[in-house]
Length: 591
Ligand code: F6R
Image 1 (spheres, rainbow, N blue to C red):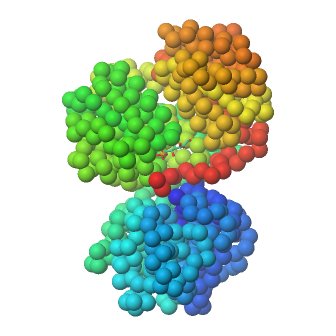
Image 2: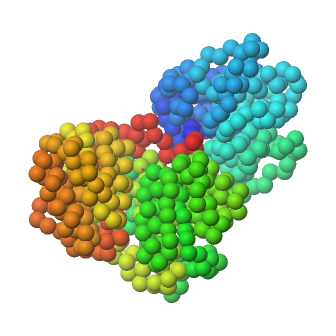
Image 3: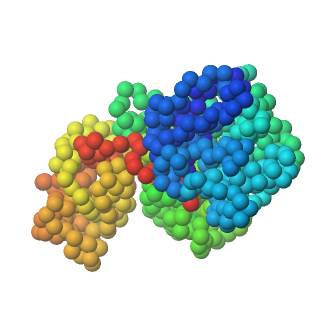
């Protein structure tokens, strides 16, 4: 994962690099560092911890001619200052920041060790710096050394590189990790995503795999396969990347409470009151297709499970696989299927692997993503954007419901079910109802601060909500949590139910409510701390939280919103880092 930012020219580097890193912290935040060229010398500062810790040790360095910075999500080596980027080659020729993973770094390290190179860190990145140095020493040419280095690296990388003999230049190269460039009258820029560049550059170059080159002042020099290229600039709207807290204490809370407006925007973007506004070719294709297959990770995987339910409701065969599994075992890559790739970020490496497999097989892919211009968006046959606005908190909230509703709208477009608009409207109303009762959920969370283990139970769509609720509790509130279909409880997990174990039940479907209620009784009989989240349609006295009586497909998602609050408030009560939970990152760009 990790985020990188850099530039060359007459830039206020301290401000640009540190504020850029802050905006990239969603990609990892366990250590940070930067390097810059000042008066012909390269200076380096790095530290364990977040960007604030780095800012505290970095002096003023106005007058610098180039700089690079990095915020890390540790892959190789502990999150210490030593392992923080930038990393420097043995003779000090190259100072580099890296996002990605070098798969053959052990082999390369061995080769270099035999040639007398030594290593001070546990990282794969230090190996890249020295591979570059080795090839530079042989050829005396940085561009050639970069080309040879790329030939030797296996894995993914977006790299910013300072070269001690050319202090104003910032070299870069990219494969399978995102990297884009920007330019202004003051200088040129690079970053892992556009957000750090907003306010500095209005135009961007989205680099392709295999691109490399250098920035110098206001000039971009781009190469691919040994040939010079003219960079193609595109514009990106700044408001797509707005991420103010607007008075909220945390992004997670803000993003939960944006859900009604996210749903309204989704509805208006894909339905004009008379007709659906999806790509007509996509709808015609889906009408003819009998089988769809969803691929995704984490919360997007659970949203995909909702998508499967929606497609089965309209009579299509539908399946879902975890991308990190399917990418290495791509069964059912049936040319007749349509493959849905769900991803908030559009940059999840496990899903990009699946996309490549599908591309190689000539399969049709449909991206459902929140991130315009992301790899999943750009490289899929069709793409449907969520328009949910930037999601900053590591925990996905608003994009979960947006993904599931977008798929439901697609199914409505295929089957001509215009009344879905009433469903979405009543769903918006139900979410508003949940928001209005958030303090009740806060109270429930106060009663859970001592909980160490939790089980989430549901059946049918409610089992999907149980899965999503349990994921949120793990990642935000650090409570060990598992989800089971209610009927599975007696096949094993019941052995773990005792006093103090939290059991959260989700129930919205009248036809399965009775059997789920029977499972809840089994929990109560063993002293479990039971909290039932129910739809008004199936409520019973003693339920912990009740949402409006809308269709189960939507009611269960309204209850997911309530479970998002439960995790949020529990994390708040425990004083945890809500928007940036430990060990996680927003965009998972390594496999
Ligand atoms: C959980 C969460 C993660 C992501 C997963 C996939 O709250 O956010 O589980 O859902 O890493 O990420 P995307 O959707 O960006 O592919």
